[in-house]
Length: 95
Image (cartoon, rainbow, N blue to C red; front, top):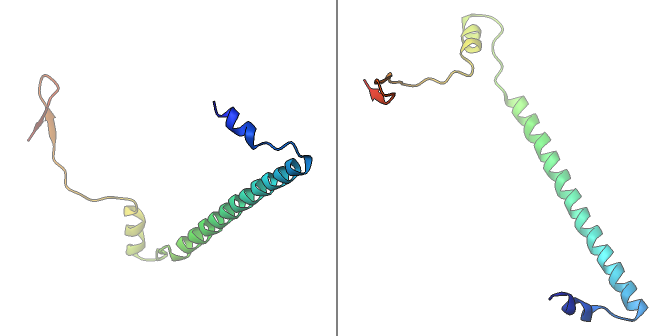
């Protein structure tokens, strides 16, 4: 269906075909260069972000009770909870 439309775009002149091939290769090279540049920018941004996070990380004191408390509670999420019982059929009942 689309093949007939593309066939009309082909030129029989060898220089026109060569020019079209050169333009197509140049377009592919430009798109690849843009992709490589984008990946490099993202990688560099990720490294800068990781470095900034590492430099900004809080340092625990090496002595005293506060350092032990901070180390012991690191990663703990506090919140409220409610006990849920199950009846004989396995359905949850709130107490």
